[in-house]
Image (cartoon, rainbow, N blue to C red; front, side, top):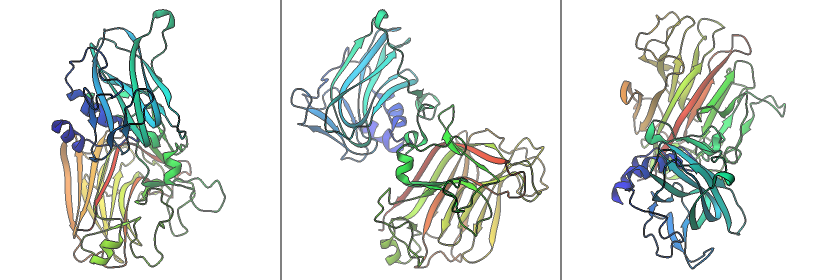
Amino acid sequence: MSGLCSLLRLASVSGLFALSVFAEVIAAVDAEEQTILNPGFESGWANWVDGDPSGTGTAISDNANSGSKSAKLSEKSSYVAQVVQVNPNTSYQLTASVRGTGNLGVKVGSEIFFEQQDSKTSDWRQLSVNFSSADQRAITIFGGFAGREVRFDDFALAVVSDDGQAADSSIKFLSSSSGGYGLSPDLTPGQNFDLADWYLNTPDDADGNGISDRFSESDLAKGFTDPRYFYTGPDGGLVMRSTIDGAKTSKNTRFARTELREMLRRGNRSIKTKLDDGSPNKNNWVFSSAPKRSQLAAGGVDGTLKATLAVNHVTTSGTSSQVGRVVIGQIHAAKDEPIRLYYRKLPGHTRGSVYAAHEVSRGDDIYVDLIGSRSKSAKDPADGIALNEKFSYVIEAQGHQLSIRIIQNKKIRAEYSFDLTDSGYDVAKDYMYFKAGVYNQNNSGDPQDFVQATFYKLENKHRGYQ
């Protein structure tokens, strides 16, 4: 079990249903069982793997559908799993009794099939998943937490006869253990990704107030999607798109965006988005160089933002100083931006450049080229990153150090560290939050020209005051 826990700690949990974790972990379970053993948890955890990264997310409950026991999951990424031997090229139906909000699934080779139950009632309901075993002789069945407390009981696996064969479950994806990203094209962004601590701005202005529309943490968790700006792509990735024309987030902003804004309050509206005087609160974070009282007041101290993405399109019209550039990640302070990460591909080039800007508080920007050059007259970078080519970035803030790494094919392509000692972010009245998406840096081109990126992983982490 310790090996499985280590895998869980290392896994990048991007999905609301934590299916990418299942994909990483269940491959490590030995295929010894001949059928589902202990299907109703009457013998506790015997024959099951209980995945519990928090240490408090799984328990054996005396609230059961039948018998006297069931499995209770109550924390993000908690799950139960068991390997079962099957006959190849056979149609099966997996069923379980479920009470609460959970998902039931099976991993067959490199594919995962699952169905989800979003139930606010206190009743037990049967959930089922139909699938083919393909050429596999062993599968892994699982039940998982999906946002609210859930109980599982009475797992069963049955062969589906030819005359009664049901189609495979409609929700499936390539598992991360086989080169995928644990994402499904059949799910909304808020189901594939844990977006409970982000809100979204798009260029739309449906209410006509002149300001970019905002969609809350709960809107995203409930499945908000917009086929123009924010939706799930055919490979399961989160597509964010922003035209040049569109509403801005404020009257002082020159550019449109489709961008996520970090919200540490996770939907708790009793906590304000920000305080008017610039002081930190539990929705935002601070550097560990800030005064102790500010660290205590903040929702987190220091932080790391990790993303895997591909830039699909950049603007091709407009002035030479603006064409082809987009911000794909940043740290924003109350008024300034400790870091902005840019991707830029000029017209006629086959590859794009990556560079960063550090804004000194109430001061000037300091630019650093990471891959290629940010210059409007730069040559096509031989080591650049092409459109639709996947790469990752890591932005890490710790005290007076702010570092950025660009990673591709598991190798560091570029890295740089800014010294923030004299940048002015170690004060009492300032706060930080991460942003990720596409912040279009062009307002001079064709109004319908656009930037677009697809995100495959997005992870934000902070620590508390120590």
